[in-house]
Image (cartoon, rainbow over all chains, first blue to last red; front, top):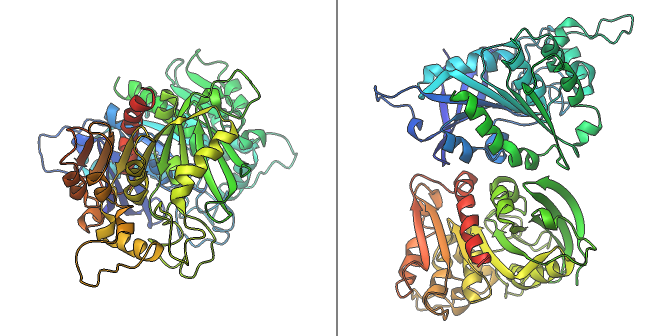
Length: 306
Length: 306
């Protein structure tokens, strides 16, 4: 198991925000960093043998260009997480320093844009495995670190790329593993929208439809929340998904988000399982996110503490 | 009156955060920018003749190296300000681009470090007049902009330099003008601590005490909250000051803040007028600030709405 190195610790809310780094096997042994907010009674690893591992965990998956600091500094969720006694984990958004050609060229691909998938193309597959990092490696690392967490109770929250491919797709690919998923401005249909097509065709495989049909490759659909939702095997009524999208979001206008495809995919689901709310006048920024994170954290708390 | 140019507008909390720029006479006609959070019913200049100018205003004065964006993005106060229906103004921390030799050399002097004073030294006096900008110019500009504000009800909140010389000293220099002042990690005794001595000796005048006495020049004391408080003519019981300092603040340890001098200066004041709280384990960062801003905003709201 990789060894955690503590980089910094700041008192905040009822507890601490701690930054850790470690060499990640999922990322081909590159160093990765994450922040974790630990509410008061789990503020540091302790030798107290009576401590309960009873703090549920919310993962916050940030969007394109962000690091592990964005949500922690600007997300506006830590006071509520402290009140609810929930830990929040802020992973990075991609490997750093893999040294792959083109990795640093674009803001929406490569560094800062890992898209929370496991790459399969020759060039990217050694390092670009953020899916494995989020789903398997980080929970194990956290368990091992003995921070007082209950890793059987995890929920997901994310922004933009962080949710479209991250929180939502991870949630839908792993029925029963997570308690709930919420999203701000998610990329809902990446296999048919520009950011997703660009990323998937390099990380996974080129689109091989020689007949120019509209159907994307199966490997793309396996990371596409709209496809995942419409084909989900999760029992009716078992999903808990909350999505907020600002009506003044430029990326909504440019067709990057496509929340209506997600809504269409909910047709056969029980009423209220997947709630998509359009928020009048809000954009894609952290001003939007920080307005609603307290409500999202409280919404997750219901399921995390159920 | 300078004309405001709207640079951006983001929906946040119950209203909007709007960034304006204008050519500031106080700063020798350099362009300055500020952000203002306007709660819902005053979200934009309107032609509605029935509108009440009834929104009280809280000024947030940021610390060294910061701009008008720091408090808006990381301060964690906008949701509470929205709930309380209070506007929050985030000015910049210094002039920009004055072109004075040495202005860009240090992080704690010149650009990003205006110290909320009016410079009197030949070199700096044309542009470095943040005191005038905060106390006189900006309220007039805001009045003229017709944003629905009630500029007769203003309070001050600040961080570090933003409070030690800014909010606190401005508050104490203008008895009756402001409703209340609150501070995070303020520089309480700048005329005797390193940042202040460095700034005051250039912006104001060199220390002229040839006898090496401990007494700073009068011009320095006129921006020093501890001196201002001990000599304040404000009637007993009329002050409302709330100060939070983290016990793990590195600048506290290095002797930059000296909250005990402020506490000593309260000796002859009524109990509870000036409250200085040491917050266990907190440091100098926005993690500290964002933990307590909701409480500070509610505290100010009591006086702003009284």
